[in-house]
Length: 133
Length: 133
Ligand code: SF4
Ligand code: SF4
Image (cartoon, rainbow over all chains, first blue to last red; front, top):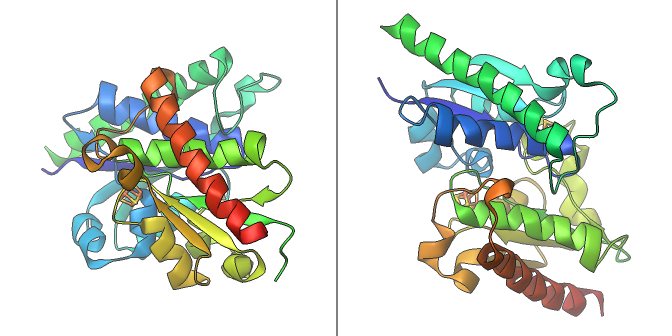
């Protein structure tokens, strides 16, 4: 089975986009490097033949920074199969009142939250791999 | 065209170092180098937004900051919005091998990476000032 694609949004204005990005990098580089990989979302947005060939019909997980669901919608527009779509605000409740940082950097609480998000993503990757087996 | 603000849009690429640098350059322009005079946009909103985002490069002269020679931000802006006023391919500044190194979490930034951000931001300022003068 090819690696599961885990794709964050490219949120630039607020910390939510950076939380999505950092959580995905933790999964694809540290927690599930053999089972998952990421793709440049901006490349997906271009919709060019090269990226469509990589993503079309492939199992994907997206992590968005807000309800605009940019990663989910862009992956779907390029033909990717979004099996699980998450967004950072859905996991925010226990973290209300914490300062997570900005679009540039994460605070210690921000890193803890990103770690938590990456655990959710890693669990999903493993479950998807097991379903296929 | 409104010329009191200039748009700076990065690719934020998730597959290589150049993408990480592009994000940091956009943030540096917004926060430090040209605050209040720079505006940006989450790139995938061209697909996921309500359509108003497509006027971005018509409203603002826009500089694209791309992490590698695929120039996804430039291509996406020109596909969905308008011609860019200036563009940067980070691989031309830091070298292709470096730009294509694996993507970097902001917690692993080194002095070398910050120097790459500085060099790219200086180049962005040159283009910026050429447009605004
Ligand atoms: S989902 Fe929200 S934060 Fe993420 S790129 Fe889209 S608009 Fe930006
Ligand atoms: S320009 Fe390169 S680094 Fe940026 S999104 Fe495209 S492929 Fe990725």
